[in-house]
Image 1 (cartoon, rainbow, N blue to C red):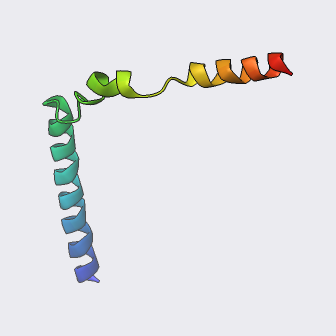
Image 2 (image 1 turned 120 degrees about the vertical axis):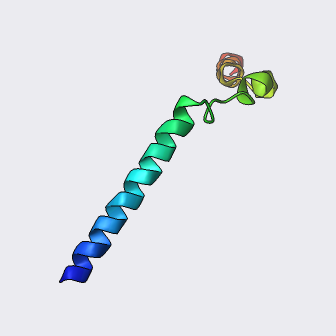
Length: 60
């Protein structure tokens, strides 16, 4: 039974370590997205697709 307590305590310490590492990574800006805003203009707009559907309906 003491082995279970040892394993649980070790896993909690490791989980807390990963949580602290995650918080530090977020605070230092490692998850900031610098790439997407620069290529956003290359993506197709969804509004154009809906405008094309409206034109097709008007033609019929």
